[in-house]
Image 1 (cartoon, rainbow, N blue to C red):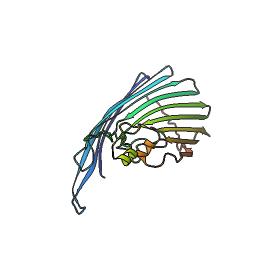
Image 2: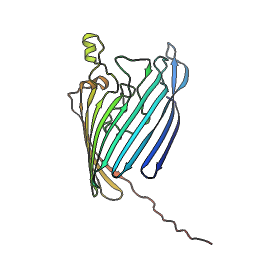
Image 3: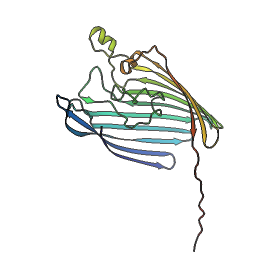
Image 4: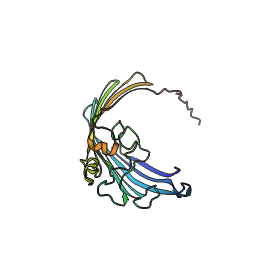
Length: 269
């Protein structure tokens, strides 16, 4: 689909301790209307707006990040019912640099979602447009990279630890995932025909990684992730919770310095 986008992002640091970012995104997507024969009869663009910001603070080895975003406007679908957007995304992260070698972080993020049991005529699922994969909600990308976007939302409670010594760094992240709204129990629906909310707990993801810097230009990175999914996860993602869900990776990162020139400035009076 054709997209039209206007994006404004402003960031300001205050006295090296406080940072503030403000964002506005006007995102447009083209919508087509069809006749009974399947031919396009009309097309237009529907816009959604996202507004919010991020506040950061650091002092004495402690740091905190607080973010909040609100999304409104119109969902890009032809049907006019249920296309008004009313969604939010909030996050809080607290960290401590325990020493020069060890840092720990605890955080929480919520993305609102659509209630699958007692729905309404609005789109309550927050859409993180053009998101940075791997960086948020676990490196396995179970959410918002695929069919989960626009669904029941997400609550992500996580704990991270990173240990660094000389050219080596080790880390481990644990994420506890829960739905952001009621998720329908499909087993109950198939058995009795009644709509009932399932447990909100989706699963736990463990991410571990290691990196070493060989020289100024070359770094080797490796990692392993394991998802311990629940039956509720299968209601929104499909699959079988009894099948092992994991992955491992090995990367060679090459960042050469192609040009390095120091200009000599001569003062002329």
